[in-house]
Image (cartoon, rainbow, N blue to C red; front, side):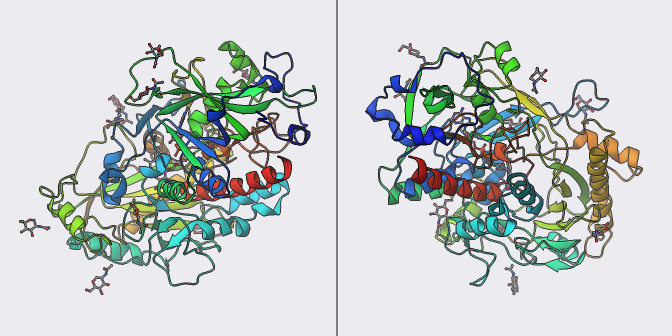
Length: 620
Ligand SMILES: Cc1cc2nc3c(=O)[nH]c(=O)nc-3n(C[C@H](O)[C@H](O)[C@H](O)COP(=O)(O)OP(=O)(O)OC[C@H]3O[C@@H](n4cnc5c(N)ncnc54)[C@H](O)[C@@H]3O)c2cc1C
Ligand SMILES: *[C@@H]1O[C@H](CO)[C@@H](O)[C@H](O)[C@H]1NC(C)=O
Ligand SMILES: *[C@@H]1O[C@H](CO)[C@@H](O)[C@H](O)[C@H]1NC(C)=O
Ligand SMILES: *[C@@H]1O[C@H](CO)[C@@H](O)[C@H](O)[C@H]1NC(C)=O
Ligand SMILES: *[C@@H]1O[C@H](CO)[C@@H](O)[C@H](O)[C@H]1NC(C)=O
Ligand SMILES: *[C@@H]1O[C@H](CO)[C@@H](O)[C@H](O)[C@H]1NC(C)=O
Ligand SMILES: *[C@@H]1O[C@H](CO)[C@@H](O)[C@H](O)[C@H]1NC(C)=O
Ligand SMILES: *[C@@H]1O[C@H](CO)[C@@H](O)[C@H](O)[C@H]1NC(C)=O
Ligand SMILES: *[C@@H]1O[C@H](CO)[C@@H](O)[C@H](O)[C@H]1NC(C)=O
Ligand SMILES: *[C@@H]1O[C@H](CO)[C@@H](O)[C@H](O)[C@H]1NC(C)=O
């Protein structure tokens, strides 16, 4: 069968071969003979916010798409009821428990926050995340891409149109030029008002927070929120008060376009298959994917031990798109011979393309908690977050209120979270700090957080933080764990790092002022973290070093200019010097997007779908 239609036109498009290494043992593309039942137009690895939206668009456009994911389709209450989201973190079917190193071993501080949760599932981490829908703070990201590629399509205003396209807003009157009402991503939000819950203490604090700064009712507007304003956050929740994510989008496309979207779930992608087209001037070409059915990532609960894997091959008529997330996408490229040549050789992997940026530039937001004890315990209530309405009256109320699920204890309340945004230094044209408030004691994602019931917390999130770490292989087996080094705050004396630390200290001090305000001061008993004795810059820095956390990692296969040695992708998400291969997920960003990455990632994936469709219609 003819796998590569019009192969010449395609290859002529990819003449940049400066990183491709000769002399490798690649098969010739003309010798590739796919099994017909394993051929798809596109193969997408990873069904998260990176891979999901584009897989849906490609299938909807008439192409056959295979989506490979290590996880399963998960429809439990933990996933669908937003109030249950903390429980899905420990769901063994879903959890990927990564361990990271925050600091190099010689740094004077060490951190115990080494747990870095991720999810494996249709929907990726969007089925277990905290549902915050935030597209504020993105101007610097899109400005950088526009400048790097001299391409006005990256302008914030153009990229915003993707948000309008995907959003199905259920809280604002139509029309609204900044919002969409007919897309696949359900959103709720609205003015910061007390939630009418039974807890008068928390309701009073909500009023205090709302009064702490001028109010902006909608954080998601094309125009930057004004400096130092209290905004109400939005959530990815649909009109029936259930979690909304790309998972339902993929199922909808599957129903509407029979035969176009195929899932290979519980399936580990282990290598991108690459061949050499005729002619030395042509870049090596991705033609398919090697997978191990039923094999697990080493960080999943299903993993028992490294085994000899049995492989199946899938073939792509057009392209392979890698969307396995910030850790696994670089691993998959490296296992396929794409990465730092010296490193690959040290693990016995034959390098095909020398791209030293693969796995470098691991970036993230910075988050630091400030916490207080409240004077009263919140009322105990009767909710057990159970699975049986007979024993959980709150679940019974939720069921009884179907299909809308309005007004039950589990119905998402607008009120908390509300967020204060500001610019940590003058001269920025977008806020770079967001402080969100949590009606609980929240020290971030720590394995053993300890617990007290009457806590509340301010989390200061510094966007566009400067630290850069890396992810590297520890071996050539697909089930070898990864070496993940955040290299946080290194080198600590650099001006960028000092600015990040100053912004975080400013956040703690701002939060301390806010809790002195009426409606809050009456309820807060004492500061627990860092504690009121922690005051000087030096003391605050020490606290920050010990308790910094983050969960928005990215940027390990970054898009960058031709002359950028660290760039892995060009401005169309194409892996440099390999044809028919793209990476579209959190690893594609050059810097961490805005404040919360999921909706920005959905937007990026929709743009990638446009580019893929454009290139496919032109070249195949
Ligand atoms: C606990 C938590 C809370 C969060 N809260 C928020 C929030 O409130 N708001 C927000 O905007 N963002 C939040 N985030 C971040 C956001 O969810 C992630 O940044 C986003 O999901 C990343 O998308 P992705 O597509 O790059 O990767 P992922 O979502 O990680 O998806 C990658 C997919 O690839 C699959 N995969 C990986 N390797 C392989 C392989 N070798 N073979 C086959 N399949 C593979 C995985 O199973 C997974 O399904 C949160 C994240 C976490 C972990
Ligand atoms: C809302 O999302 C749930 C899954 O979280 C889905 O089952 C339901 O059909 C959706 N409802 C609407 C109206 O979109
Ligand atoms: C992952 O780690 C968390 C925190 O330590 C724990 O609660 C959870 O049970 C773990 N899950 C799996 C599947 O190992
Ligand atoms: C709270 O209750 C008041 C009075 O009953 C009502 O006007 C208001 O809309 C309610 N607010 C919410 C968020 O439900
Ligand atoms: C994977 O597991 C399924 C269900 O347990 C089984 O039917 C199938 O044969 C397995 N496939 C392989 C390649 O082991
Ligand atoms: C691979 O296949 C062999 C032979 O069918 C089988 O014995 C073995 O269990 C398989 N390994 C895995 C990891 O599925
Ligand atoms: C590749 O990795 C090696 C070993 O870690 C390192 O010394 C070298 O600088 C890297 N090459 C580039 C170009 O970054
Ligand atoms: C809890 O249940 C008891 C007994 O069924 C009931 O009287 C009470 O009102 C319930 N409390 C709440 C907060 O729903
Ligand atoms: C923004 O607000 C912060 C906090 O009040 C202040 O420190 C900063 O100077 C302000 N920046 C601008 C540009 O007004
Ligand atoms: C980290 O854990 C060790 C051992 O449990 C403990 O002594 C230390 O105080 C902890 N550090 C922080 C910052 O919590």
